[in-house]
Length: 214
Image (spheres, rainbow, N blue to C red):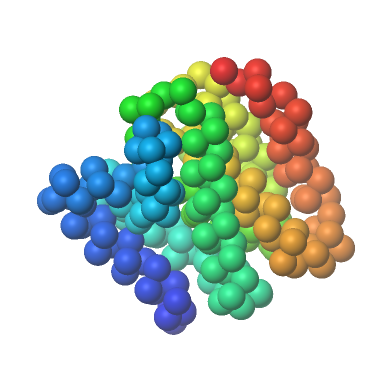
């Protein structure tokens, strides 16, 4: 499959910045997401942290998923709207993380997962019948079921602080991808109305009762 030049550039920046961070702790610490530093005015971390990763597995997984789902967006909507979705989801993920962990000054995180989650959700809205795998299920499931399940899992993970995973970034990115896709491609209401509603229910519930997650 031919890869779009813009997508290739995003992947290359992720790879280069992440590899630099693997071997340069000062670089990594300077640009990672950290609540205290962001509160002191280092807002650039809201962007740069999404181009750093914990290790090669983290990097490869995010870039592979992006490589699989981004072409769906680019083919259907074009590069400009893909970039709106990618960076909008990135900031949405980090904004929710900043809000949810605002009292944890030493909370830190890295990774493109928020942006990637937004791209996945936009792709699901564009093609809700796509078949996806969700561990540990051995069979593929429709994209809209995967989407609802992932949202609920992320909400549960935030509530219970499960593992060393940025559930808030994943959830915020998914919500960003969902909302921005509706904004830049309102035709989705006609093509995938049921999926729009199904994915929207957990988001509405989160907005109404999100204060109870802590």
